[in-house]
Length: 377
Ligand SMILES: [Zn+2]
Image (cartoon, rainbow, N blue to C red; front, top):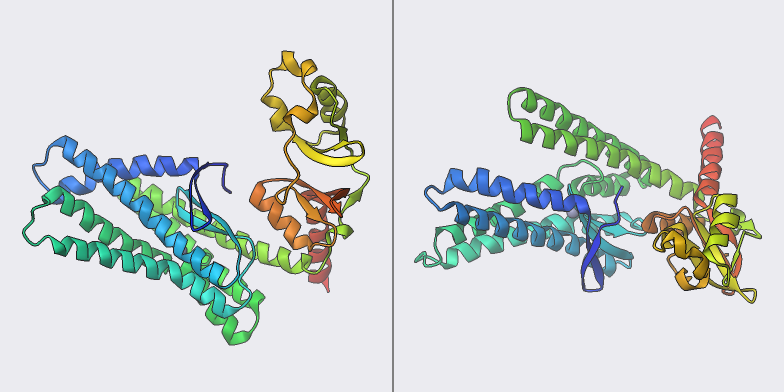
């Protein structure tokens, strides 16, 4: 669902990334603040003033979303749930959970942390605005501060909609989970409700488009579509986790994978491996020891004419936790590694020696068989 994006900074050990789609949002926000919102409430400012208000409003919104996701992440860490980082994308932010919360209490606090942080930040902005009774900062500054106060409350309110996987939907799931002690049922019900909310937004979006509010209409329509897709996907993910839990990677692993010698020249690598096997990633060995892995994308960085002058060893990347997994590890872990790093194949090691390869395709095939059998049972 998320493209690559680029890394911005690290805070409290969490990597903050921005997806390219967020840049579209940033431009849209700046533009609609400078051209739409601020001129309605504040008359007779210079055009440039509206524009810098828009820019600061967008920067403030960015900080507010990071603050919201950071609160989720900090609470998650307190409950020993690993969070790899935060990504901002067109519909806001997302903290990347590598595992699902282990119990309803964890889920409840984690879900509430974000909206509570946004309410707090909204209150802080409002207090800052009150500090300047004499109005020495000027109207434009107050305009931006009041906007940020309001947008944080809206952020909290929107996220508290009981539409799973939004925060409110997670709160709902935690409550249902506590009530019936059945995570699968709780997830199914809350994602159905989430999907219903998505449908309502789609209809409202369409109606408002027809009645002339084009941008707002399209926006609601897209958010509705996004919520529907996300709620469906969250339920599917849970089913997948359930099915793979307790199954070691070894079960799905292909032994004796195709490996490339480190000294192979790139032209030979492309001809004899990529065109031959059609995989995108290959383990690299040197003196029968796993020494790295090479991906099609790394070959593309070298000009075709120079392929014969370079070896795989020069362009390969290291084998680390992102692309390798221990043979005894849970298959759920393999799946979440593939998801987090956007890989379809990862290497399986035994005592840091290459033992095989596990592919997304093999995991999915097993899942579909298992789901098929369980449904007919
Ligand atoms: Zn949230």
